[in-house]
Image (cartoon, rainbow, N blue to C red; front, side, top):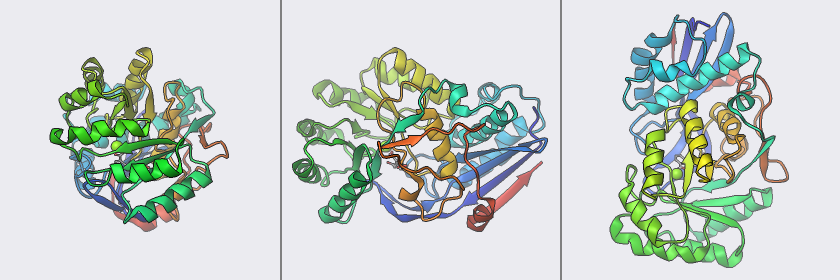
Length: 368
Ligand code: OSB
Ligand code: MG
């Protein structure tokens, strides 16, 4: 297979409401959408970054330029027999993992379509449905938090994750646990705590949380391992796990007992699957994280979550939890058992609404 044309689009797709984490707010999805072509067949991918480098160093402009100047020249019009070869082709590239992942996803989608293979099945997915939860950003006040919890629990989501930061942790958790003593509940700090605040984190043990996600800095392992050794609640790492090697390091150090897998953060689907296999072998539960993706990245996530080691509910909610209108014609709906249905079509299964995509595109480049 030779890729003979690639289209890159920077988009601006507004969220239903702004999403607030401990250190930043997202107003809309500013991903780079990748479309690759080979002899008339196409494949779609998403580098789910933002306008600003708050979650990771990459932004939509760095992704666009690295894909255009560095990555695409290495694959355009070259013979590719399997998407797994991209790891080798890109082996000397440092960082820029979301840029690599968006391109790799599109090549996987294209390749699976030419082989009439479903992505999830091909990767070893066995599940028809995957359990999902919802991630709630930091609200204005407790009343808003309650209304949101109520809404998503009524809709049938299996677990709630709330974003926390110093000053917004013990109080909201106390209130939630008072009203819902038994729901699956977890927290995510996106690195907002310093080691001096370890006592607060230790005190969260009493809330019977499913996990505490990334309390310390985005690249830390050491302080996370100090915390994990002192509490019963599993520590989960998100930002700190940037590759299969980092995942091994984290487990050896006991820096976490759960891993959040996002294909973009680890440089693509192949690395995500490697981490999954390694964790499964070592009986470490994993779950699929989210980047508030469009329907394209979401379809990839649901396919990935179909693998057997993804035993915990993912941050993969139905498209309408994020967007009034998404750029796909087949959005996911929440099943009554709190799951999403894994696609079975060739590729990842997202059917792109190109007319609407063009409306929300702010910059498009064609490389051939
Ligand atoms: O830390 O998991 C995170 C969104 C953007 C960037 C980072 C994170 C998140 C979320 C939302 O928590 C997950 C989702 O619903 O897509
Ligand atoms: Mg996180």
